[in-house]
Image (tube, rainbow, N blue to C red; front, side, top):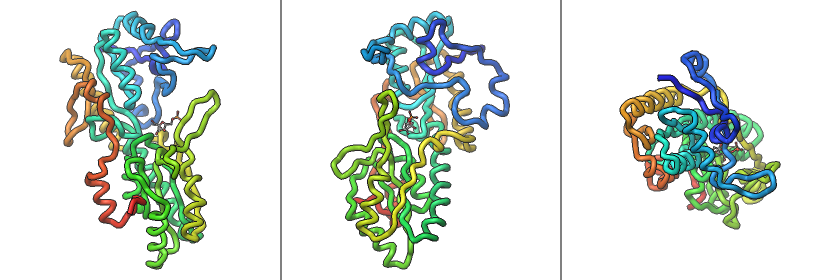
Length: 327
Ligand code: F6P
């Protein structure tokens, strides 16, 4: 089976000629699996159904992508991405009658119907290591350290890294908090004789006014960011601890993937090709109950996998004495 790689996601099919290149076994030598990012490039902006044009207007360019795909003369499309990308690709595949297989890949781990998406585990490892590095300096300076992590509207990275990295407080978008409850927990830590505390906050946690903090980038694109800096002075005022904020940012998305992500990617990739060989389409490969399986892509895009607030990890965290700032 030969393959073509589309460069820069859907943007590659909006170029003339389409930005594609042949993929061969040489592309998958021992170095590829050790690399973060993508060898084909990607985009996470420019929704083809509402595409920003240079004059400031928006245009539906979806049919151009479907036509460009069919012009390649390939049998099927494998799309690798998070919930937004899979949603766009599944809509394109319906509209353009494209035989589609999705592979979940996002550090946010918010794709429905799969326990894990590729990239999540490595991001948790990076965030956990950040807490390991913040702990000694927190202890040396008698400080509260707040680590802001990515995850979009799902708190998976904050929750897992917070537990693994020994946080005292974990704030996730799924559980409303109050500064008073956080301060109570940190004062308890102090009363018990500890001179520092660690907090992890997920980027989409809201401020007290109910709004998410955002950063506006050049060109007007907005992304979540800034909640740790927003909280730090309030925590300092409420606890008397010097408080510092660290925004972990894109280091969570780079570097060499860990062994779990490598194995997950390899398992999902092989299964995706098997599905195509079997003639089974419009599915997403998924990791469920220690196995690779496949699910209807339409069911995936209807589901958002946020943190189950009644689930094991939240229960475990509470039992360990970690506060979610809600009581
Ligand atoms: O969806 C992955 C993600 O890393 C989010 O966790 C984060 O909010 C966003 O992408 C950042 O996007 P960008 O790389 O465009 O700044």
